[in-house]
Length: 279
Image 1 (cartoon, rainbow, N blue to C red):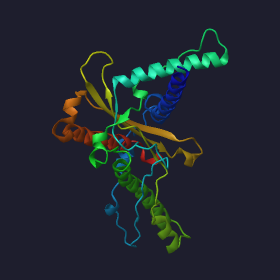
Image 2: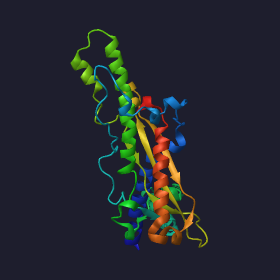
Image 3: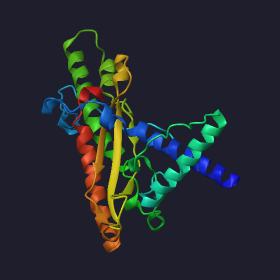
Image 4: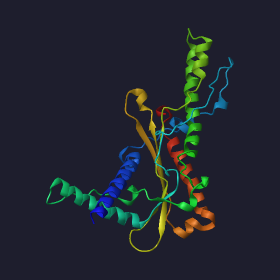
């Protein structure tokens, strides 16, 4: 019995730790005001493409700016689609009760300790084994989203470089070398991306409807550090309409493929609407 309690306590700690990481990652979705540009021309996506620049002296913005992942490493299996089932909530409740009882005994509190609340959205779930290794089922935030945002970042930094070149052309003292340096785009954007968990989450705790909703979120740590301030998060959070597990699986997971494309497009568009000056 003691071994079982210890096992539950360890599991509770692991689950709560994982939930905390997700909550911190996406907390800006509910705690931060929108950072959408107030005018269309302020949005990052509105920056002109590299090919639109032309100059008589031949000096135009050059290079490509990438958006990097904020963290160098992620938990094993993070790139895989995960599923949160009703049973995960039950297991976590049991584990958390055991953890609270253990804490109460350790602290000598007769009345026990208050339970730490959680929701199903805090759970990580399990990987879907049959989708392991399928690129079309992987977390879109690990590769495709950074690539798409890199294209936007390149335009944003090109617009800044063009302004510098224009300033150099209008001021005295700028050498050709100074101008060439101003035209070079940085290899990485100041704003890295946080990637949320890629998962299917059960819709209803009671009943047997077997409905699941696809969830995906990501956020940019916008470059307020350039102004001596903490990073300002801009976030996207995609939730599909609920569908049965069978519907998700039908036709080689076609519904998942369709919703994955929607989730990626939504986050690219949402994050691209933030002010270009914050990138």
